[in-house]
Image (tube, rainbow, N blue to C red; front, side, top):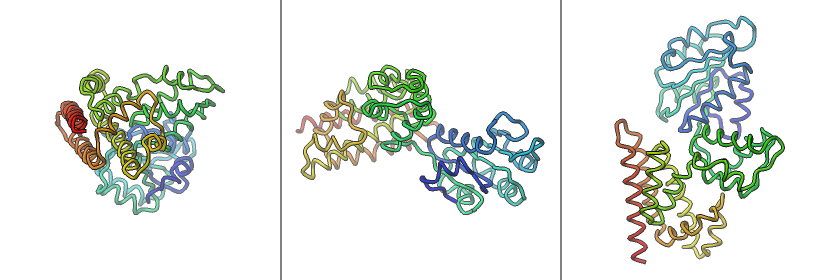
Length: 339
């Protein structure tokens, strides 16, 4: 059965009668984090060889064997499968047909919506299916606050907004940055804007954001340099670039539509959450001057097409990403000249 967003944390921390949890989606870091939470809810010591079995792709054929094993020290067992696909469906069905209290956790990043495994798990009352996708906006704000609260660290609103704008699409990378900030602040500390800026730096995707803002503003030299630094030097993925671009385009379109409806630019921009970082307001404004709502919708569709193209096996994804940035720059420059 599908687990709705409001019930995810409760389900992970208390799996109850569930026999299996399928974690799918685009955020591999969030999948791993949620798998860890569910496993620890059953066995706090994940290094216990009698109660926890972690199976990589090459060990999936051991699922049935492990599901029938007994815990020699007592307590419920966990079988944790990674890199899962439809190939485990038959073994999974056989395990559920047997009497057992073992919890099977399946990490299935990229599992298609038409997957047979996913379809089976969504209909079976003993299975919980949880989608794990990159968080944004208020959901991401809440996640970062919750992570910091776990370290007894507070954060100023402007510092949180700055960090949310720069958070990458992977939960593991975001948690790594949060842990670095918590170490910097110390238990009981509070983080201000300058603290966060000093600690986070480019590691959370600033180069990608630089490329997105510059591309939509028509600043070709800046956009090309930032995109190349992100993709070639920093090792960011073209898919991450596409998602950062898409997020920026959606925010621009939201403001553009409000302006077309009669709202002033400043008022429309103030409604964005998180707000535009003050050092980027000029670039944001230049992009608003260049793009119409219809053009922004087309840019969003083209960027979604870029993400799909980059996911194709053997595609020259870095070249596609750099070319897309250059194309957006060209469109913005032409629009600015017309206006």
